[in-house]
Amino acid sequence: MAQQPTTETVWSALSDIEDDVANVKRWSQVLYAMGASSSSYDPEALSVIAGAVDALAERLQARWDHAMGLARGQR
Image 1: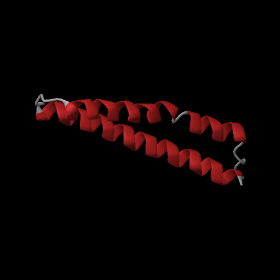
Image 2: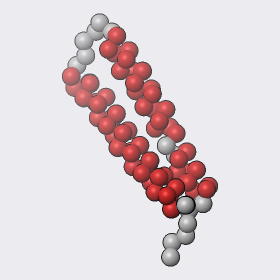
Image 3: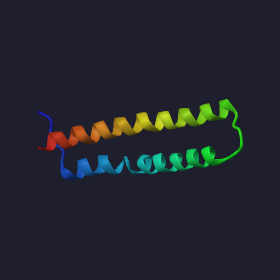
């Protein structure tokens, strides 16, 4: 039988998300700055940013699902 996750295990899983959450904010600041600029951007450059944000979102979702699964197992 699998052991119940400890509070420390759940906390560790949640703290692993911290950098990605901060990076979401940073990416939004970059995009706001780009949107406020009168410059035009190469579509390929924007595609690179979109790919990075998409990968960040997928990683964050997977880590969140893992942390919530641990938390549910703790009840």
